[in-house]
Image 1: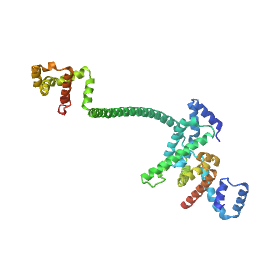
Image 2: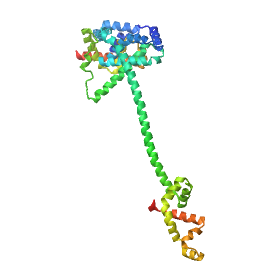
Image 3: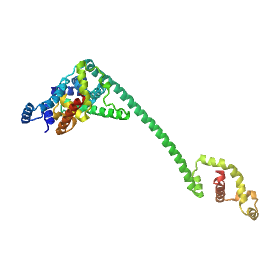
Image 4: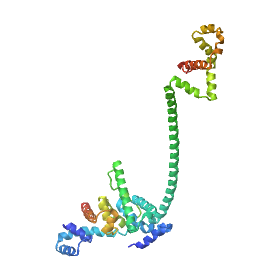
Length: 203
Length: 183
């Protein structure tokens, strides 16, 4: 242990009884050790004088009232902050829902278009024929009333050998629709749909 | 020395809803909290901020005090932690603002110390304390100003007694060396 360590431990009461006695003996015999010891002892004295400080009691009396004021302010801020957080969460939810809804709707339309494009013509006709609601029938009738009225005749006009048939059966060509069976009529109707409804120009 | 059983009784009463019990505890410890913080951070304003923080922590966390250690050890631990946090925060502020002044003259401006002669002595020692590394400063203050045993300091700082004694030695030696340089 060097002399500084001994001095500090002595002043800090960390020496054993034997070490303390030994140090005091050395202190008595050495002027240099005495000088060094005095420097540390003076610091100890200065510190000792500052352990009890005459302080402004007004300051310390103000601490508790200020603390309670701060505590009340913090509760108000805490409540306000919580309301703010809840409001922000609600806004985020609304925005997220709106964005999701828009994206989903967009996707829904795209999916519907993809689906219809994937169908064959016959599948489309089947699909239409199952849409047997009044509105659908009304819509189709309205859309194709002109075609129905005009193109049925045109369609008949396209039937090959119509005149031949009329002559063969001694019929007026204009009365030919009266002899067409329901099935044949259905076929002509579907043919018209195929030609007109799924004609890209008419879409 | 403060009576531990009194402290425990006040804590129990506070936890049962008696706010006056908290006020008594605060008055009992506020001076020690302030001076410990003041010597650690070297500034009245910073020490004042720490006192308010420590009182707030006491108010909120006394429920978690487990009565295994003394209350004042618990309070000193909080005070030391807050002081160290503030010192680190101020260090960072100085780096960001490129301010190299570690100890500004404004630290001297406060009216807490009434006796002028004592104020001069206090400021002189405070200057040397602020030159110490934080860990050495902490041990030196707890040992010399708060008269704590190394066992108590170990509970507060979490360091071993051997390490604390070494820190104390280096702190004392540095203060002496700085004083010699100034003479």
